[in-house]
Image: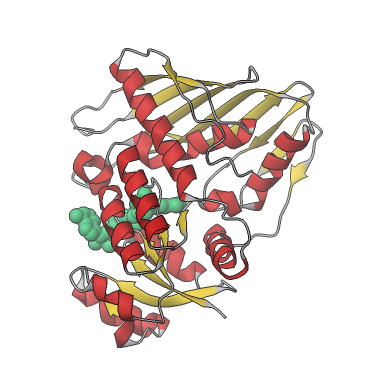
Length: 340
Ligand code: NAD
């Protein structure tokens, strides 16, 4: 059986990444759409052979509960809308994929997790890198200490934002924050899988050079993490600088992904002179198939809601550190969300 996925929000990520990826999946397929733009309905129906009964708008969305062709609802809306639609999807009895960042607060992440538990549906965050083979090779190096103990991880994630200053990513009420909410979650993730542990403390700094453009969202943030085994990580995330790299310095060498989290192919090298090479498959296809297999066959959920919540706890601690002039924030994450 292939599970039917309905995409909620037909913006650029759904249009150019998720829908094409769903043409390559083995365990799920594009069954339905939920859109607030009437003109997109016929275009998508024709392009992807979607029957009228599987087309919804934001108003009649909740009636999707009665549609047996839809097994999974994938929420691909601006960040502040994730919680509302994920909770409604769970109440409709559908499994949920929530795009990153999972929500705009830890409280919202809890509300999504609780709604999924109460309605007995599965939940994943759209962390495509968790299904990427280069990422998983790096996790193996860390786990097996191929290059010894990880001592220092450096990571960056950013791009130069230009154009429409009114775009939702630059509007805090819709995005929840700037670079940190958008690209920063990649650096948080790489810092964690680069060390194989959750951090125990974080300090952070914010830099602003174009306040007229970044009116109420962060432009550039750096943060430093401490880990229980003595490892240290430094991350940079920005809407004013490019960045797409993970480098792990270990007691007996190093390994690096550069680029580390773009749509691929990812590129990896090591101090042994190895060049990582895996067959290229769309990360989003791997990601959605991983979740479908989790539902159908009980395989591991590689990006559970708890992982998205853990990252939001770190996001909130970073913003708090900045508010307090860079003061170190202690984190008590234990092992939550560690699934590598
Ligand atoms: P987008 O702006 O291209 O699309 C947003 C969609 O939401 C549009 O269809 C728009 O019509 C709809 N929408 C509904 N209400 C809206 C409102 N009030 N304001 C603006 N748009 C509204 O954005 P996108 O790049 O597709 O991003 C959507 C989500 O996907 C975000 O959470 C983003 O972080 C995530 N995303 C993830 C990745 C990834 O690699 N995992 C990549 C891109 C985007």
